[in-house]
Amino acid sequence: MAGAMQAKASSSHSESRPPDGSAEDVETGRRGVEHGGDVRGRQCEALGAARHECEARGSQTWSVGALERQKAPKPRRKPVFTLTREQVIQHCQEEGHCLWVAGQVLALMALMNQRQWTILALAEHSGVSRSHISEILSLKTAASTDIQHILAQTFGLEIFDFHLLTALSLRAEVSG
Image 1: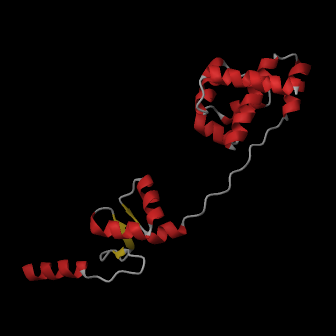
Image 2 (image 1 turned 90 degrees about the horizontal axis):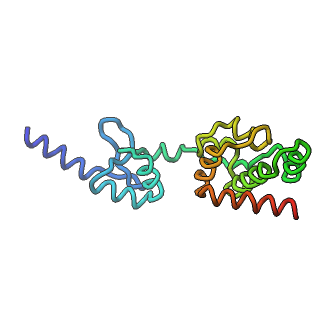
Image 3 (image 1 turned 180 degrees about the horizontal axis):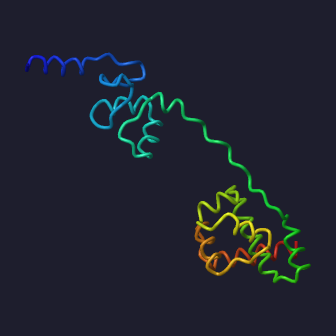
């Protein structure tokens, strides 16, 4: 009995490894690496980028084949706005809205362009609904103080900085 256990232990240490350094799970027949021990170190050296991705996902095991099958990330879609910068100012003037609202929209558009965020991406990052952001950008509604604060924080700004960007965006567009 003890001899059989020793034979099994020695066979797992002397198993042949594929060129990529991964080990084959004897029970399942799948190639992969368990996190921990010497096997992980050899595998991670061979597939360094895959290790970081695996650890970022927090998984305990991963398969080389699964990583190879992963799709490349889609290219980012550029932000699409229904109104141009000039139309934002014109719309506010025609409708009798405060130009400060136009400045907020211009600032928000500039921040979204800088990060190449769509309305959907901003909604996902901020927690503000996509429809509400769309209404703000198309001047159908003005952003409340709370929403302004949330949007500013989403871009890593204090509310004062967002208001300063609002003023500068408005000044550049009106005087420009």
